[in-house]
Image (cartoon, rainbow, N blue to C red; front, side, top):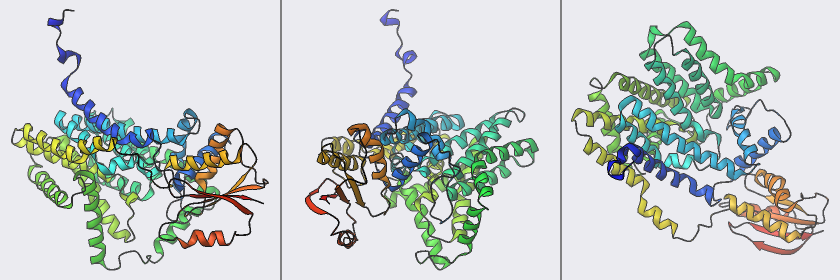
Length: 504
């Protein structure tokens, strides 16, 4: 082919280039922690890595997942089931699981484009993808290993199922009701409070949208999908006398904790603040004034232009508003402290609703150029490329002991000080349970240094993590152990952790 006859547009379409840049920016923001081993390696991560070790290495299949904030109530096991193949692929390396979390965030950008493009064309696709890419709260979720943090992905998958249900003939969309049931149940499995309210919001919206057109078979397929995912927990409940159900009922009928709002007005103010704070971190680059302006713009655009919107866009507006309404009412009825992970998937709802409002305005005035300009400004304010480039040339952030690389440094120090001889270790850590070190000494130690700690060894390493705000606690802990061996060396490592070498 001659160069003069070559058309670049046939080789690389502009819209793919734009999407590629959006994905590239989002990937850069999500992968930094993985590439520098500076992702959070906390109590929850250590606990989950030990659970994965039991499943993969010890073949101990679990029917429940991690603990929730309610005593006696657990998440489902699917978080562990989903991570197990990656545990095998990455040979147990937590950095590999952190990479998967980042990739989940990157895939969410692409799914955002696909959903937006399906329901409103290229502009809505670019808008949704760009805001998902640069949203500070979604970036944060993609950089930490924690089961609720994958909820945005399942929100997007739910929307794809709903689009298929609406776009296919009523006789061909049965399988998507089944898939929707699975996805809704997985939302509940990874974060109970979030998942239950999200599922209720979806179901209520379908009553408005589909109504009497839905078939009994489709309802049964939806329920079947829910039951398949819930089956491990159902089995656990049957085997243990419905212990989780009883614990949850006891929690609901118990009195509110002291940190919960007491009056209805306080509760209402608390909920409005919580939802607006989340809106700000989702689409308004953490600027409260901008958040209120964007919120008002979104509400007015959707209300005024709803009737002129395409039918599929109307359906999604109903879905989004139903979910938000259920959450607002549900969290008021709940009446207790509202933790961030209860609302973990709402940033996707906010972003899509705002994207739709921009789309409706641009469509109304037949001027997508201004809409693209607004989108670019919001994207750059969230992404801030100058700040990101400048950060590349700054000294590497040392961080605290919760960083993965800093805990690896602790284990490396201990093994190097031991010089191949037997040792044991004791840990003071604010969460009390030293799951992070248990896993690293179980996995990393033998991999790098070919042997495990020995509880019978005479050399002991006392690992004392800082306890900000409670500085006396490590002192009391050491006071109780002042006669436990002779201190021959003490070293402070990055992150503030102190390691004492003791000999009995």
